Structures are given as structure tokens and as C-alpha cells.
Image (cartoon, rainbow, N blue to C red):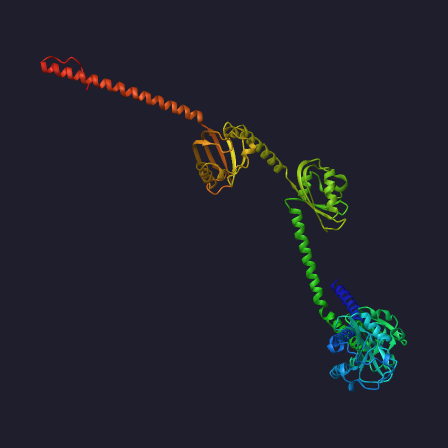
Length: 623
């Protein structure tokens, strides 16, 4: 048996390992491919964000610079000595640097700016009066009117905002130029003209060329208008619309962030683009897919060799350890059998009735205690469908348990199989909670005696309640705080108050000091008695009261106190009358006794006189 088990285990484990090696190899291959793409994405995104940050910083500087130029007093002045080419009919015969006045001051300001800002190709200004100054000096046509230029119109339309023109190629220098313009106001605060700075984008192209993206990768800057600026390695794409570059799905590049595959010139490429929210420029990394995944092929070969090695080692380990595993299985089977035997003994010998139901409510097994409780036989009980043939309430509790929820039945029950009637408490527990349907384990307890005890207790409580209510003495119950929680009719009569007034009355705070002292003693566990004149706080009645306060638990701090109260006013009145009569009788007695003593004294004096005369005594006096 174990040899066949060992053989089956070997074959099974080898098959599992073979399949696992294939799956792991395939998964690792897919993972390495995806990891290569993620690495490309991560690297490209960092590079593109770096370029975007550098460009944002560059443009921020230019914007700040043009704001400073537009605010310079020499630019905002309205001197009439600045040249107007359109109205003078003369070209640039005299360079601005050789002229005097405001024109020379503006030229020197522009020249100074360009000296400290490499990449500045041109700085110029124009006013609404057609005045025009440009650095560096260059030939200007005699009919040149700056107001007719597009850059002037856009600058004036911007109303003080910095406006970026579309990139263009300057044929004379071969530079890719972006012009930044801004309107300015004169000293009176009126819109007066436009300042413009021409920036060479070649510096950014050099930055692009330094960003290496895979083996054949390239980096592009795309203006928000759609014009592309690529690195130095691909100058043929400069200043072309991105729609002309043959990139499938290029529209996605205008999203804030995009990663997608596209076919370019018949080859599959991966594109990763980032848009700068500050400038609107789009920075895109483009690389052939096969270059991105070139490292994956070497990894796949290595994984194949590793998988083969792992498979061989696994086969050897399986053969070596199969005997150990077989022994473990045999030991576990023995433990399972032992566990099942223990549970069987518990099931059979339990002092409670135990049943196992199928998922449709049929009894599959039961113990002897259940047979005894039902007054039936095992043969009649096994196979009995309680969910269909029992009482309605019992059927409902079983249905709940069969649907995966615990339930409890507690009531009188008559066994269908044995005819025996008894009070039962049955707990139904689903074998697989939450599953519907599921098998059920039930435990039954005969609570007939407990129910009888409960009935006897209720009867006893009722008798005590009758005694409490009908007692000729006033009875009241106080809680551990000294608050009245219950009282009988006689107590209400003695206090001269209603139940509503008395229930909830805080005797420890509102009663007389003597009564409070007695209640506190009783709450501490010591019985106490109060007897004396008392005025009810709740009813205002004054009477002689005798109250015995008895703790519910003697000898230790109690959870409550029972007070027995008696109106002894009539008895006190009788006692006073008796005392008065006794006092009167005592006075009369003293009077009579005094008279007798006087008579005795007189008789003695008469006898003494007669004896002195020589005569015999007249009165006989008892000594």
C-alpha cells in the first residue's frame, strides 16, 4: 500500500513541479518583459519630468526678466527721440548704440540683459506710436511698422500677461526661436507698447540630446500648438507638426501623462509623455519596443537554465524525501483516526443529547442520550427528517440552521417518534456557517426540572408579593443609594403620600438626620431601628414612627435595604395616659402612707404618757 502511495506521490509531485517550473518560467518571462517596460517608464518619466522642471525654471526666469524689462523707467518713458521707421521713411542708417537719449538707454539695457542671458537672440520693443528699438542692431526696412506685426498684436492683446509665440526656424541663423512678448504701460498707467525677447531653443535641444532613452530612443519637445522640437540626432523632425511624424495615436501625447505603444515607420515603439502644466510644453520619450525588451531575452535564457536546474534538484529531493513524507502521512492518518475516536466517544458519552443532520434536515447520527430523551429507538430516529415532520416551531429553527445561521429552540416539545413530552433547550449550529445549505450539529438538554423550578420560583415571588402588598405594616425597599424603589399601600398611608411621590425619593439626602443615620448603617450591613416622632417629607404628616431597617445582605455592604415601618402614635398616647395614672396613684399612695405613720406616732406617744402615769398602754403597736 505504501509503495503504491510512494509511487503516486513521486509521480504527482514531479508533475506538479514540472508544471510549476513551466508556469514560473512563463510568468517570470512575462514579468521581466513588464519589468523592462516599467523600468523604461520609470526612467523616461524621471527624465521627462526633469526636462519639464528645467524648462519651467527657464521660462520662469524669462517671464521674470521680461516683467523687469517692461517695468524699466527708460522703456516706459514717452520720449520722442525714439526712431519711427514707418513715419520717417528712413531705414536704420544710425545704429541705436550710437544715438543718444532714450533710444540709446533702451538699447544698452537690452544689450546688458543679453550679455548675462546666453541663448538670447534678440530683444526689442515697440510702442503704439510705431517707435521701435532692437538689440542687436540690424538693418530695418524704411517702411517697417512694428504695430502690424503679429507679435505686437498678441502682446497688446495679453494686457500685461506674458505671451509665448509659436516656435519658428530663423533661416538666417538656423536657430529654432521662441518669442516671448509682454505689453507695458507708460508712466501715466496707459497701455503703451510691447517688449519681446527671442530665445534660442537650441540649448534645450542640447539638453534633449543628453537624455539617453534606450538604445534607439529619442526625446521630443512638443509645443502646445503641436509643433515638435527633437534632439540633435533627429533634426529632420524639427518644427514639424506632431501629426506629420507618423505616430499612431499621437493625440494621447497631449494628455497630462501618457504611456502607450504605437507603430512608427513600420516598427513597434513605446512612448512616454509628460505635459508641463506651467508652460504647456510636452516632453516625450520614444524607443523601439525590441530595444526596451532586449535585456529580457537574456533573462529568459537564464530563467530556462535555472528552471531546468530547479526541476532536476526537485526530482532528487522528491525521491529522497518521499519515504519521510509517506511516514508522515501514515502518522497523520493514525492521529486522525485517534481524533475521530475521541470525538466519537465525546459524542456518544455526552450528558446532552447530540444529533447530526444532513443539509436537508435528515438525522444522520445521534447518541444514546438523544434516544433516551425522545423515548424512541436509534433505528426509528436515524433517517427521520426533522425539517419536514417535526413541530412548526422546531422546523423553523432547523431551517435557519440549515441556511448557515445558529438558532435556539426552548419550549415544551412532544417527540414525534416516542410520544414523550418534555421541556427542551436545543442549540442548532451549522457545520459550515454562512453556507446555504449546510449540515447541522444539534445539542439537546432536558430542562423540564429547571422549568418546574422557575414556575415554583414565580409562585414564591407572587406569594411574597402578596405578603408585601397586604402587610399591616408599612414596607419599603431602598437601593444601594438610599432611593425608594418599591413600597406597599400601608407605607403610603403612614407617610401620607402617593406611590408616585414616594418611588424615587432619595432618603439619604432628603430625610431627617436620625433616619439617614439608620439607613446608612443598614446599607453598611448592620440592622438598625428608629423610634420617635417623625414628620414625613413627602406627605407632611407628623406621627410617632417605629422603623426597622434590615440589609438585604447582613454583615457586609448591602445592595439594598428593606424597611418595616409602624405608626405607633396611638400606642404612645396610651403609654402617656398610663404613666399619668401611675403618677397620680403614686401621689395618693404617698399621702395614705404618711397618714398611717402619723397615727402610729400618736399612738406611741399616748402609750408612752400612760406608762409614765403608771397605767397600762392603751394601743398595741406592731414593731
